Image (cartoon, rainbow, N blue to C red; front, side, top):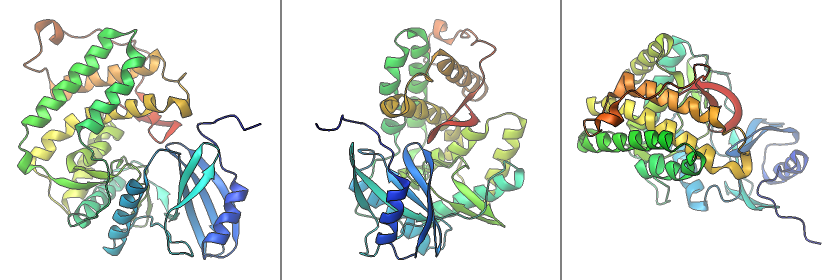
Length: 359
């Protein structure tokens, strides 16, 4: 009898250790442990010649071309001296291997381990991180590759996520309309910005601060799985979104900008776009969650989850965006308050069970 079909399996760490030892020239593998499951699976690998992180992509998550784009970008950054976790080449010279899993072929890439500690949210860490983000943008101004990759445009950030969100809010049409209206406002205002004055190029796509380690003054970036060409304003807006806009969040944001500007300027059009892209990021994340319920489950996408999103969006709009002149008087009336017990969303994109405060 054929095995029952699956959508997402967990590869044996022991079997991966044997495969790694045969595939890479780094000596005996002393340990291979699953770190977390999320957009992809990550394994901590300890070998005779150091520590590494193995990423096993979910089946169907990224194409060969998309992975090749990410690898090319990382190798470009490494050649420019930017501290990033670099992809490792196997004995045969290739970077990507495809492993046959129950659900289909899964790509596997081994990366160097990023030493140091996680960012602690301090002012100095925020400043260091801002400079590191600027170094990635500066070093990739001349990045070119023939590999195709999806763009971090409004189709990716709003249109596709909204399509995934709608089925979850069919029973809350007024709330769905609130999100759709705000998305339309973001589209109009981004379109109204002077496109020629906005910085565009390679983006990490997930610069929230948790995909980096600090050792001394060195910030090493990792996990470029969400990268692609796009607005640099979106890239920096992700940090703004991650740390909120209370007093502590404002201080971190100011320090981040100081660090960024110590290496690279930010134009007025890009700064004006940041509050808009914070909204786009919040919607993109919920679309990511909604679109991956086959592997992550759906019980946690309950009414409280959507209450938190709506509360955060309404507060952000009132504080940073104001009302659209195109909205009707009824639509511009103050929306009903979400339940006071509703807190900010606490689920990050690449690890649904991890607690992180954000919009």
